[in-house]
Length: 304
Ligand code: SD4
Image 1 (cartoon, rainbow, N blue to C red):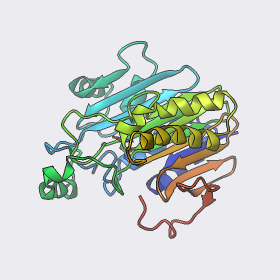
Image 2 (cartoon, rainbow, N blue to C red):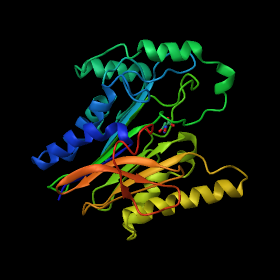
Image 3 (cartoon, rainbow, N blue to C red):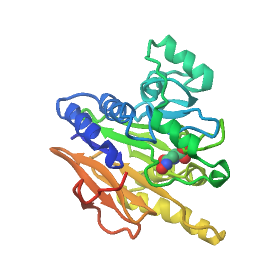
Image 4 (cartoon, protein in one colour):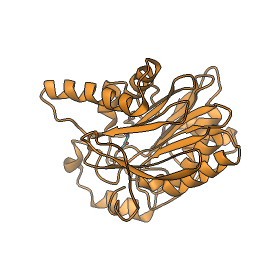
């Protein structure tokens, strides 16, 4: 059995390639990397890799992570600049016993030592957006429409499971700000015995609930992927409401070792690509926990 799930409509074409690799017998690791590299290389996606929107200083600072569910090893980078494919760097760091999570300059040096390509990640469009931005308006950061992390979970025919994430974080974030995406247990988690999970949305909230670890724990205790996503989300949202906060902007995905996938969201619609066995397609979850429905790209026009 092989399966793959990835956040947002933007990953659909990459996910088709990743899924094709799985169908041809490749590893979950290769499928995750391929899917995410496709999103990172696309300048039109302003939330991931090349073309990502900058921080308040005008720097495009990237976070990424890669976790192997067989060994429970992870690699990650945070606040890295000028690395063309942060997910490839995260994967290269995965497997190290120490020094597997690197920030800033050290991460860039590691990219050079691995021979990974560097690139100026700023596009004219992103810098124009930054010049036009009013810093005060961005004091309260939000995971606004079109600013989303790519998270991919894959299962291969040999039972291997991998989780990967890549993001430029939030537009106009404070220099040095890191979200959930490279933080194990929050932005992603993968244990091939029980399943994999990942999150997108406001990282500061996602980290408060360690949501990805929570989902995998629920699957360990027998929950199906969709149920686990819904229960983890419900728990954090209930607490936020109790504290007088709004429910926030959080979307979650999960995959089980037998190829079932699930998702949950606080949004009115959360598109994602998913497939098991023979076909990959676009689906949507909604904030009312309705059954996941298959959708077309046209129906999701205007959604990230
Ligand atoms: C972050 N979780 O840096 C990321 C951003 C994101 O939808 O996923 N936005 O907090």
